[in-house]
Image (tube, rainbow, N blue to C red):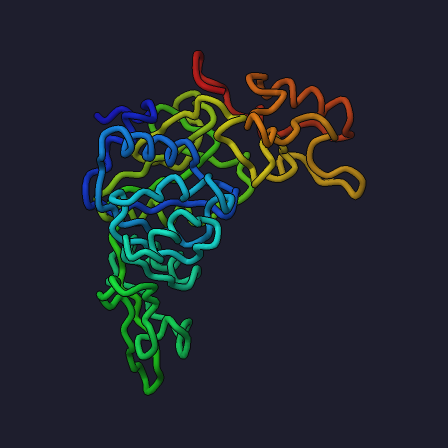
Length: 317
């Protein structure tokens, strides 16, 4: 049986030349940063994998170096199908210089496409995009001269026009969760957004692919309830665990503590943003208990979800 909880380097090794990689995230929310960093490191050091197709429904990154910007290397990507490119200037540069094929499709259509691929359908039918640059009578969502294949078709159903977006089977999906158990069950209690993680995981599974989930901690066997293929515990939540851009440890973002009209999220000074010069927080290396204690002394309610899972001895927390 495949071992579920594995080091990030081993998890990344399932990617091969020409694979289709789908990634999750929304701005700085829910981005599996450590997986992207490790994939970039592998490509820089070994030159593999090459010619990947990247699929993402939303903007993922900080507009500079984080998120999908880690994949902005010539040769690593062959094609990009995305719903938002504004936060990934390094990928945009590849598009503008005709180094990759690129399609800009509606964000919602891509999220529905994951569900349709999971259901074994050939693609997604929608009125969204009619009369816009996505319409094949205009540009078909193509972003440069080297992008030639038609992924959007015009259809007439019941006398009305629709667009048919061809489905893309997923070989590998990168997602992010909070807690995993040794069987690959995942929960997302500390995540600010759940996003399309489940649909993406189902699409990869039904494409006979892999789901790789970056998690914060490993719990006792059988505790969480949603199973994936591979789990990679993050080595440092303060470095890889952005709740959003500029926010690391702030349970109010993920509703693990109730918001207050006066105080929302963590008390001032508990978990400060990372330094713009060092990239590190003054609380790097401190456990969640330090944040928990700081909050508990200054708020009326008590923490809830972060203490609900029994943690496996020796796991990353």
